[in-house]
Length: 371
Image (cartoon, rainbow, N blue to C red; front, side, top):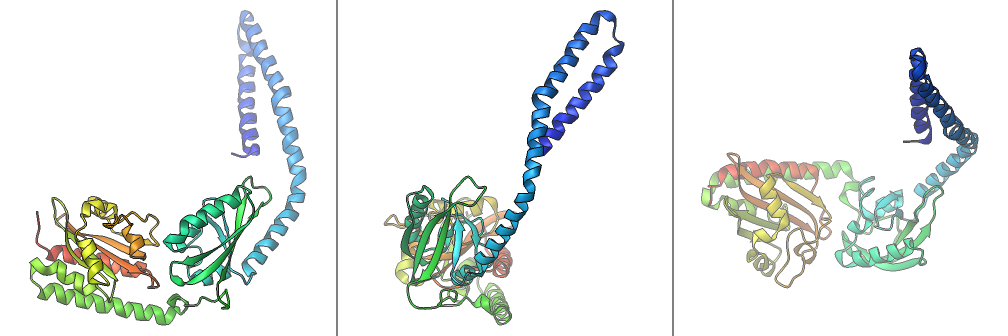
């Protein structure tokens, strides 16, 4: 609530109390001293509270003319920020993005507005996130400017030089951290080394739509020609490679058991085959709620549990996006299917997630119930 709103409410309450005092003039003579005391109390309230409050509001109104010039200056600074040829971001001490200029959007390959309100560390390789968070917190505490080398999760082979400096925007109580990103090589920082396919919307959308339609056709064929007992394994084979780098299938109505794991290598697959699905919070939550989940740059590295060596599965596999869908039939969840995309591969789109949701419903109907 603003000071003006608070003053308006207090003044309205005072007017109502005065109206009640006026109505109390008709009381008997013995009660008039009580009414007089109340009237004196209200007058004292006006002198001691309402009038000084009004003077403060008047003084604030007089200063608003100067605030107009400040707003023009802020608009100019925002224009300069967006027009800078270097990738620049404004973050808080928790690395949450407040602003990202156009060059940074092109450099990181994210859609405009996607990162605002999300940690900038979500764009970095897992190994660099803790160091970046630590340096950003130090800059925000006023311990001086910092710089370090990091890698983007989408392009881990290209080092990025990050410079962090503290700025103090007027009117804000907390320090903001200015981040400037520069590639380690001599490439133009505003141009990604490996431009995302989303830079060519028409061709990309047509190609991805055709790929999804081909996938739907292949999945339908597999479900119609495969025995029900092998439906889940057959669907996993259809999805592996062409649609996802990893496909993990868990089945069961009473308790989930790992049915199939298709990975980039047999060694990777063997590591997750022995994993208990109950140790995967994401799988457990999907089975419990019956709702699909799509994550871009998964924020929780432990969401799919740990490997036998104690490393987070999502970090070990360099997962950049995932889909986790329930396999439902007759109101019950018969299994959970999890798909990973890794490294520079383009993240799952909402259209692909919708198509996968449709295929999961068909697969759930094709699967036999398992205890």
